[in-house]
Length: 380
Image (cartoon, rainbow, N blue to C red):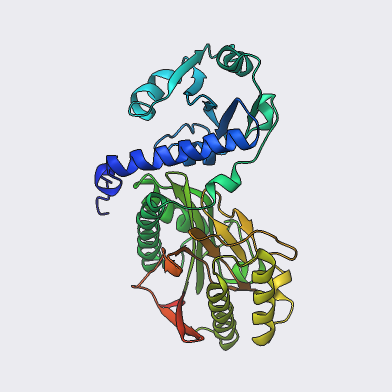
């Protein structure tokens, strides 16, 4: 396996990091003002990553939504991190060493977050992104949806390396491998690059045809294999799905992949600044009907905006969310046994693919003079 250790200063120079941190700080100050707050507590992993430009990792328990500490930002511009004495040394030396956050530390056996907040804010009005803190909860999703140039730069690196890990794994798959082995192969490559899987699916043959989300069980690869996962670094999430088929692919399956490819192109073509989630759902609905599969949009979500969550919102009837000027998108149109899934960004009015796999088959589809690429099935 090649060495993909990241030089953070080359990928994300200190000057750019400082500018993004200042921008996030300004956004948070406007957020406090708009909500008439004196302080805000940030405890969820996705929001800590957003607020610190992907520099702070406070995750210990992988499935937990909240960190082993919290950020606290105040209306007067001060910033703190609240944590316990057992976590404090690492956080000070590895996470906050270059950041302007002051520590507030409690004993691990008596971690009274509200007492820490009161010590700083007094009787001021406080809210949080986590309802369990004991103060009113307010979502930070609107703040983290528009991507900065720095986030897009990190996203490019992440998409490229996830796509490479997927390609290398798919090319190594052979009949007789179990779904668990397939899962472990891709996971090994991701973890070696500090990329953490958050959805990790692998399935084979009839299980692919029977289930839209085939969690690995006892399947053994015979002819048809699928890798389908989401993974993250710096808080940003990438989604990808790829298939391999050993021997000739059945005509019925070829037809389904061709149809889903055209639905994918329709969704990519419709991904423009200002387009609403319900309009995109209607585009998918129309595309399935045109391909001879009416109603398939009802069988599984089609994807939507991505970023610090695997899907920040999905295209759906009545969806009022709008595509932003700079935003991550992950579409996943599907028919039973066939799916197209990649991560892109809308940047400067154009769709930029993050998870291109040029060593694998690529299908090009034209829409109004624009060409959109979708992943094809690897025939082995």
